[in-house]
Image: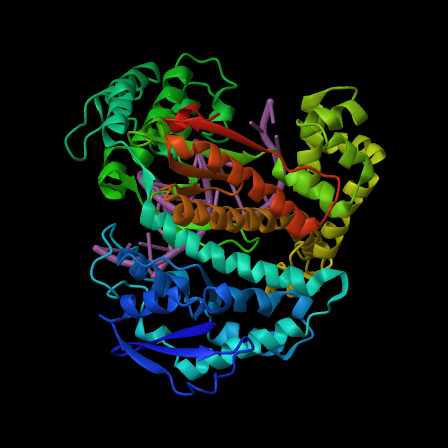
Length: 572
DNA sequence: GTGTAGCGCGCG
DNA sequence: AAAGCGCGCGCTACAC
């Protein structure tokens, strides 16, 4: 059953569609549902399972509907997010020959499915407020039921036009399903929140910075370091937070740095360097994750960031609010399981190089990847057992290193693993020439901008050097895109498969395990202690299912490392 | 006063 | 050791 939900001035319009997006004959007209009735009506349809299958909810944006439904206690099995799927279909090389891609190209420019960042409302308060007062629903992005139905139908036509060769159509369909599932997971994780102990966080801050200072004042420990620095640098009014001010003071004391970056400062042995580095670290803790952060982002023992699915062109998620994707190691001790619960922290070991092996079908590297530690396997084959060298070479190949040690190691890597190196080189050359590259499941990199093409037509020698530099930069982007993006494909499938298994545990086993955090190649599940084993099994099965879905039965392993902890800082 | 580019640093 | 990918955010400095 395919159910379309469209915004309506008094609530929602609900219409049953066929899989292809045509109105079901018996119910040609959308049914109007008031805002207050909506949760109950949605719950009712969700419980109807013709043929045992839950409905697929089709809507413009998951963020417009699902948070409010979750707030009223309604969880759904699956959806189809028109804006996310439309964005993939509009740019995918798999659909480039379709009318959809041609029309969407125009539409995306004139009428972006996602409003530009600057026009988006501020993030919602942690307390979501009244049902459907959620700021996701904005009149300017309303589409009529007929517009949305036509959009869905057009997307299905485009998907059907993908060549079945090499499983392309299935792969793209899988990506759309995983992306839509990701949108639901993002809303569910925001709803659940990361378990966060304010008292433990406060203790960490007090240990490092001293007691909480009055508003606008430096904490005691920072102020002491500031005074020490002013003395050591003979600069009585120094503001160490100002790079310019600091740079001038350093120069006056014969410390010849070109920037105030910490790795450059470390080169100097001046007695002011040690307190300066201590100041910078503590000042960062205070500014980024101090008491103000705690006040703003943690409420009722939960940290609830907003995840932005599709926020990165490679398919990785972005986030808004609280810096969710950069929880520093320093404060991970504040992430703590509830009494009787555990945190299960799992990450896919060395995901990107393993994805590269699978993409390139490099037999020699596949053998190396059978090792639990891939870098050790690479080192044994091509670097005389030097793991550090092997790691640097491989990372350099994926990022496009040209200089330094990583750059020098490239020929050595290419001798032992020609297919893998060739694969990323090919992606780089495509990008340099202005082409686009595509992930395993069919997400394509954006085409170069009009400005890019202009730069490539430049005339003077000076302009040409600049143009070549821009082209190389784009080459590094596309080189990395295929790996990072295909890793994101894998992670999306992993997450969706894990969600499915956890839902089964919840409904069949009445286990209250929840996904609470996701970061590129890492997930966190908050689970009752007696459900930990079942959750670990789910995590591992989901990982191997994801590998199979992307690549089929190939001899490359994607191992996950799992830690069961009370506190996140013990995870690795 | 407001908007924003650049720096610096956190994460993968 | 500190360049080669992708991000978000706080701060300063500077343009308007």
